[in-house]
Image (cartoon, rainbow, N blue to C red):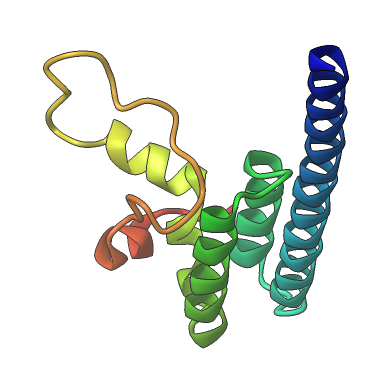
Length: 132
């Protein structure tokens, strides 16, 4: 009898694991599709700075988490309101900004910058960052 109970519990555990895995994959697929929609909308702005940001975002976040998707949506709203501001959110501009700072971290380094809202280049500095 104990063996049957253990077998039933094991089968129930395996089935629930499969269902949870499928639900996670489905949620990731939905987040990825939402990201594609937002990035396609941004590309429709036809701005070189926006295109750079979109390319960097795709590379940095191929399968976005919920937090990354939320950040992208906030970023898209800001960029749609002012497409010229897109360059300040690129990893390239952020890396150039931290490399030009007159001081260095005491321990370690600034690390590799990623595109997004975190650590965005101040607007005054972004204006002086050359576009390619």
